[in-house]
Length: 89
Image 1 (cartoon, rainbow, N blue to C red):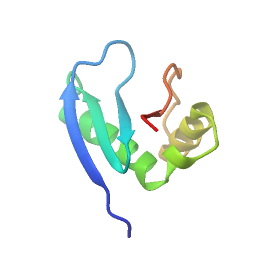
Image 2 (image 1 turned 180 degrees about the vertical axis):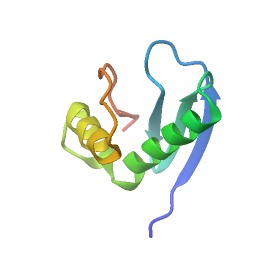
Image 3 (image 1 turned 60 degrees about the vertical axis):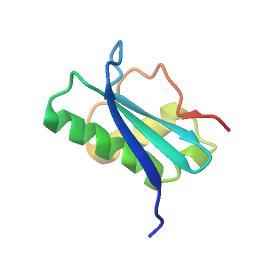
Image 4 (image 1 turned 120 degrees about the vertical axis):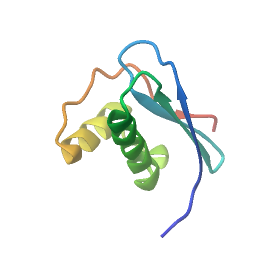
């Protein structure tokens, strides 16, 4: 199993985005909307962690396809996608 360096912050996120990940080199920062309930925060954390574990930052697929696949796996509706997986690379 591969290990990752991950930071997690709960911050206000405007709009309907619940969480997202930023990657710089092999260091990941997960941002989770602070207005979420504790259980929703954990769900958002697991969702973002799946992106990291699945190697989605190295994928040639569009963010839309990646999110559709992730939400299908989670059996949850896919949100309106207005952001990319963020990388400084």
